[in-house]
Length: 98
Image (cartoon, rainbow, N blue to C red; front, side, top):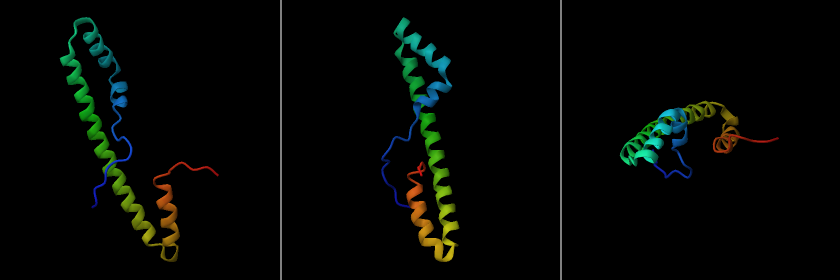
């Protein structure tokens, strides 16, 4: 498998922060009131770690889905080439308009 660089961000740290909103506010308050940055850094590193693990899982699932779709299209006979053209467009551009 060829490894390429990501062209868009894959980490969604804001989701972790939203999911842990109460702890996020508590830790920010601790920084503001007591200057305790260490606990904030540990919390943020946890956010990065969990977001990274989620991103890896999602990317792996997308690769499996991609491969399964390619396998389906490869069995279409004469329609394979046209189906792959449409798929190769739709996969990176999943939202289309009429």
